[in-house]
Length: 77
Image (cartoon, rainbow, N blue to C red; front, side, top):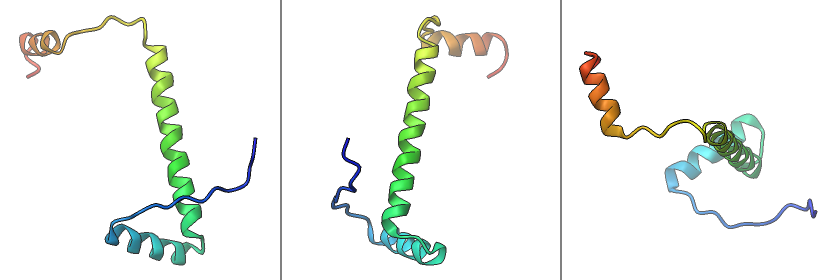
């Protein structure tokens, strides 16, 4: 597996770009490091979500309408 960093062009909204630039300067980190960390965190969260789906694959599937009716009958809504 090639571990060389890869170049990509990313377009940010001006306000986001400014905030990213300021955070990089304030934390003495590069914008690339900050973006890489944010993407890694997002992918890790996705992996956790997928694992949770796998863990719950055998649970019964409840229709939304049934859940709402049950909540109403039990006086929760």
